[in-house]
Picture (tube, rainbow, N blue to C red):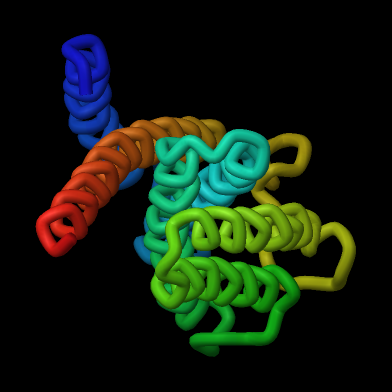
Length: 227
């Protein structure tokens, strides 16, 4: 990593800390308390922001998987796989915060709602993506096979997004015109949370790609010593 990349990473790290602090303030102090759901509604800001990052991370995996099939440069495969790992982390947060929020509101921890079901399928797809990378040892095959899964798996992202429009669902639609009935201050808190989590994703991606490239160098040196 050159000096310019290090500077960019530091700037992103500092902005992430600042934005996360602002997001916490807006979510817990600035945004009004929801009249029906009460304090549990506060989890909504981080639930939706995590969903956004999961979708965005899987889009980056999709994009760089296409690039991998065109150009086999190691860095592209590393970005694709690193983004998938981060996407799974945020998708897991979505699947954990969703039931926590749903229990007092819907009365159940889980329901096979179209949005929830397609999100769970998405999680399994990218867990499968990472498992494939663990089982395939040859770097070239690993990159190509996982790239194909990364491209095909992304098909579920627009399905998750459109599920509340295509099927009957009890899941709220916060992205419809007018913010889905959100109070303007709640909408501000949500937007800030999404921006903060986007910078958090970028910070994590920089670090994971860097670690991945170092792991590859260590693996190369170990093979060289053995031979």
